[in-house]
Length: 357
Image 1 (tube, helix red, strand yellow):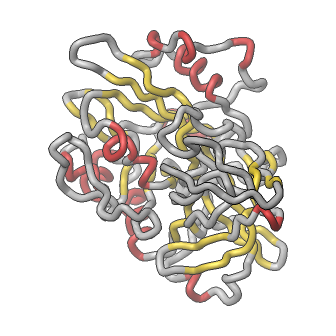
Image 2: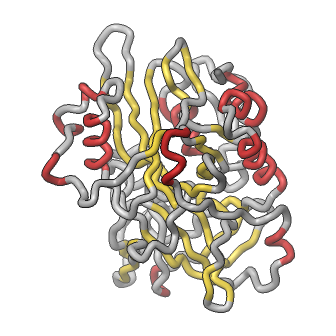
């Protein structure tokens, strides 16, 4: 993604918000992916083992996130074969990339022996207490290898592959796409999960007076640094860079008031000149909460889609969860959360490519 230069008019700093150390949002999760290339003529090669996105628990086993997270490998990366992809989530306040790599090595996860060099675990740098990582179920396999780790809204992808084996988004504009996806957690550790967060009902935001101008909070694990308005954006900033994933710290970002309400999205102000916090790479899929009369409503209104000036303060769109298309997709998965194969076949875009088990 190329970011436009901003003319210097005097630097103003904005933060990413503060860590959720008081546990206000226990059901918000970080989404950590272990992605390994499997070349036909050589040994496996680790591409990344880090935080990819954010999300939130919305039922006993379902984590809500963004479609561009669950479908990234199919569309932007390599397609539907030639790699292994597994995902875990954490609900801890601090769960760093190093923590995740140490976890993979400790658990002797398949291909973890290739976590060497820059990907090696640094035992001395582990967080204290050590975070808990909970596996997401495999939702798709190709030639017996796990490549699907989530379920993507069926209208997000076209039902046919390109000649190079990659999937295509139904629309290239994320602001217009049904950018909502889910992960289904494996059952082993569901007894330690937090209480799920409720979602807005269908059409609920349309009935809400004063939505434009209402303050909102975004909670996620993305990159955490100061942003400078009036300076040239960092070269290469955004997805598909070597910045690694997020900071691994769950933080609460006051992203300003809602400035625009569209049929499928909300746009918070994110104006660093006015002191708003901003979102960054790794925050995709973060839940958005309304602040009404000074009180945060613990109900998910939207999830972060993005695709504008990442990390510089911009009107990144949040996909509304109260649309019928979004709500029905998530409810379809929730109703089948104990049967991953059925959820994949009956609810998701993954069934287009015969990935479902």
